[in-house]
Amino acid sequence: MQLHNFDNLHQIDIPGGYSGTVEVSEGSLKLELPTAKASFRIKRYNFHLLTPDRKNIEFDLLRFPTGEWYYSEYLQLHPHLTISPELKIAAKNEISKMKI
Image 1 (tube, rainbow, N blue to C red):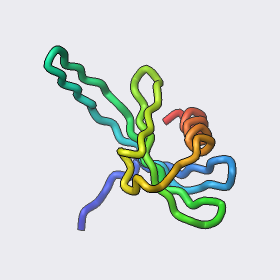
Image 2 (tube, rainbow, N blue to C red):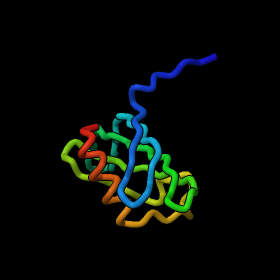
Image 3 (cartoon, rainbow, N blue to C red):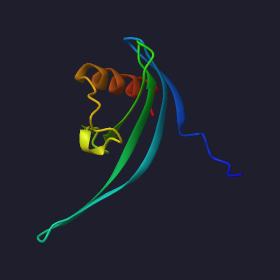
Image 4 (spheres, rainbow, N blue to C red):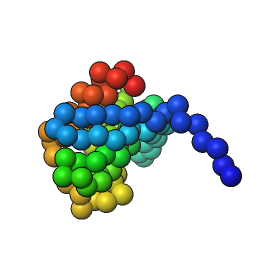
């Protein structure tokens, strides 16, 4: 049996009828180009939500230390799933309110 630390797992309710959990993890993003190298600390927010029509969805948002957010369908486990811009904005607002 493997025990996990759940300090990074938070319950979240997003306006519009979405509820579930968000897992927060931190890491480094390293970019290496022939002319330059850069490394950034980032936070990954992995959302597992139940939609208003009772479907499960999962998506990730990334946030840089500057506060800038990043979302790409290419980062998702299910790239065919379209996350509405309104849901992304509402999720970001809830994360800011929760201060995580």
